[in-house]
Length: 296
Image (tube, rainbow, N blue to C red; front, side):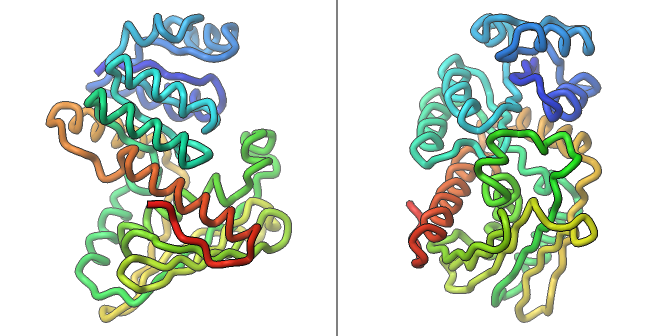
């Protein structure tokens, strides 16, 4: 499968282009970015062209891997799907439900395969954890991701500064809790210090889970943990944040398989849209102080 990378930032270089350049059955064909000079520089690093025109890149590839802010990603994903190109997207796929719906509609209309890169979902330990969770009768669950963006390549990201941990790492929490406990139907939310948020999720099955997210804790307070509990006890997941390139290679393999078979992937754009709907409900709950339904 021939891929074009859309984006020139840290994640595009360190994960998307790096994984594709080394992939045994995928080919990195070129790079496009909003800054042509950066696109050419990143392309030169991987010995592929940097494109000035996104449509020229789309004409040369089978699929796109997009590493751009969500509000930029969504219309480009629509454009790529309409050109018949398969989609490997970042989370969240958009910053509102309407934008996510447009991506889903375009992918379905064109019949292209799609995968959203929820990093933990492409790791062996997560697959094992979800298999174990599926064998239990769950009574609830919880997730906590406390981080500090200070001093990281993402510290100056405008959309992360504006939307905070809820929209940046919230999708990762939902990507494991939703398949373990079922779709979310309603959200309650409370704000903590700075961008810290606390969520109570009501799942379709009637169980509830809680999630705490932050990008602004003290460095010594950082950590990630998810668990579900039920008749089989407490099942804990400690995700790996140190091997995104390996996870991305798995995502490339799974997109290729979905494109070949025509089957839907568990982390396709429809699932990505449902994640956006939960995040939007959480945003409303933070404003209203009420329990907010999730848009179906």
